[in-house]
Image (cartoon, rainbow, N blue to C red; front, side, top):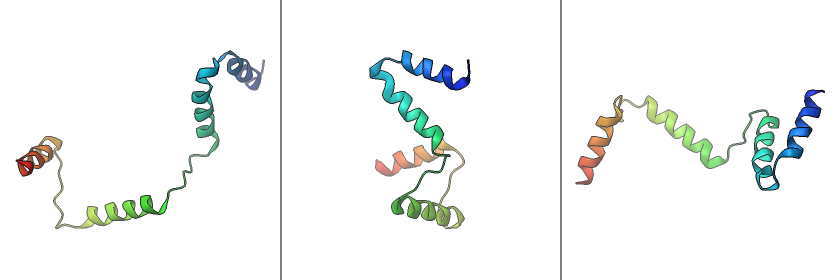
Amino acid sequence: MSDREKLFQLVDAIPDYKLCYAITYLQGLTDGGRAELNKETLEAFEEAERISKDPSVKSYTDVKEMFREILEDEA
């Protein structure tokens, strides 16, 4: 039995209410991993890149410290 035949056999065994999961997974396999990003997302990536290179922007290496400061600012 070929892989394709095995796949069809498995798909035939999937309950109708779970087919959407299989479809989503298969679509992910066929898109080649190239998601098209919208303008807002691309701008956010550019902003993150700028921020990461800006020495005046505070950064953290400890998540607990970051949250401690955030919570102190809210108090």
